[in-house]
Amino acid sequence: MLEYALYGPESFRISPWKNGQGSTTELYAAHLSGETDFLWRISMAGVTQNGDFSDFSGYDRVLLLLEGKGMTLCFENYGTCRLEKPLDMARFSGDWKTSAFLTEGSIRDFNVMTRRDHCTAEVKTFSGEGEYPLAFPGNHLLLYLPWHSGSLSSLNGERLVLPPGHLLHFRTPPEGNWALRCREGIEIRIFET
Image 1 (cartoon, rainbow, N blue to C red):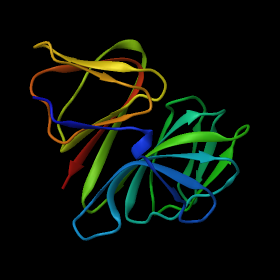
Image 2 (image 1 turned 135 degrees about the vertical axis):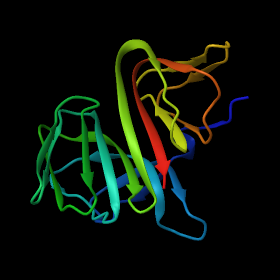
Image 3 (image 1 turned 30 degrees about the horizontal axis):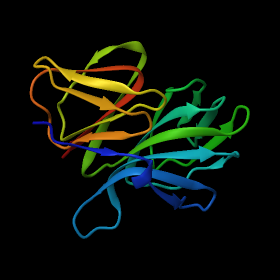
Image 4 (image 1 turned 120 degrees about the vertical axis):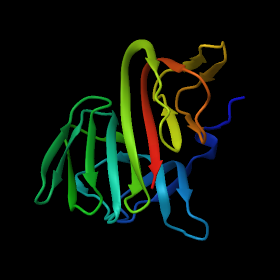
């Protein structure tokens, strides 16, 4: 029996950025009991102008481009990273002073943040119509299909449809071998320490 949660736009939460320059759409956030700061969070944000990122010291970040012509991230003392096409990815520390410079107009990005003293994340993307085997090590497996629906299937015939724009969350690994059929997708595995 599959144990999972499917989060859709009706359950997403919008909150202002810490620096007040925009807003974040939170797809899901995990917290330790009694704490307000998140342990790990999956979110999206629109960036409409050049500017500094909020300080997330103590967190590690993975950011992917979803929409738009791209942007360049400048990390003070740590170089730059250019995101040019959908699903391009940047990994960086929330401690770094980070600035974003848009290539041509606004963009939308996808964010995975993990509190360094409690967990880590591995993020993988799928691009091109196909069937992708899923790896289940880790404490949590999450899947997000930005633009088109997909489906998961197991060798023993179980099947699950994943609508676009929804976050699928396995809190415990499903049994057996599973594959994701999709055009594009994002896989997130969270490892708690």
